[in-house]
Length: 304
Ligand code: SF4
Image 1 (cartoon, helix red, strand yellow):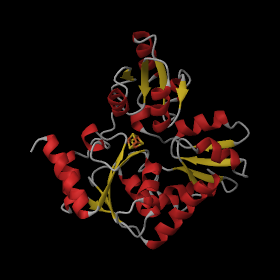
Image 2 (tube, rainbow, N blue to C red):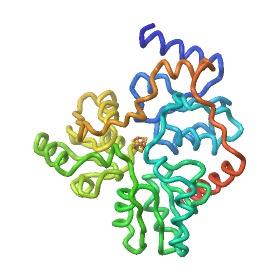
Image 3 (cartoon, rainbow, N blue to C red):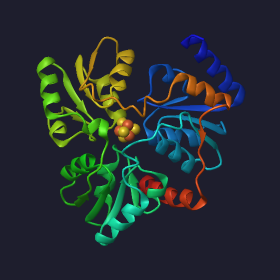
């Protein structure tokens, strides 16, 4: 089968079997082209909840499929490739954070959405990279235990100096892998390019950026900007996708380390197998986890 033949078969099967395909924007272009929705993790779970289909295939990583299940517990949710985890989401588990919480009894616990469903059950509220500043500013408690990403936490702390954020050593190994030297070298190589950076990058990289934002915000900024060249400081597929969307502009990944192997686990044949009902992993969560994690996400919706 060629790529085009496989894409046609997926399109035929998803209509026949009434399946909704979600693709995180770090997925490969051939997967984006067969998806019903493409976007950030939380946006995809909202789209899935609104979709008329009762079966959903998530092309992304495990915590994203869990978030879809939390928002749509009545739907059948598959993770297209069961190996696709997120190292950041798996860094801190519920038992560990329950112990840490005892050291900070006067802190509100705020988790990034890139956490497991089980961990969300013991957090007060979760945030996305685009809502973190707004939500933390609104919290009554001046003391925040922010988990797991210390780079995002550092960025939020600088935007909200009136709060005190306690950070742990965690984060995204893909974004944190970019060094200040990588950034300086690329800026020298492309002196006219604007630097657009995700706040999961290290503070010394973020400090050099022309724009800091979530993946969706970076894409929107690049599309609307009058500039012609951009250094893209997030997973390298975004530079590629932007070249499809804006062929008249130039996009360069900030570093070749910006490759998330977990996001690249999922292939077009995996999507075909999942849509056929012969592959993927069906996501099931215990009732107490569904309820506890939903409370944490509902608080985000209320404040964000
Ligand atoms: S890019 Fe980082 S946060 Fe996103 S899935 Fe990969 S490891 Fe997790």
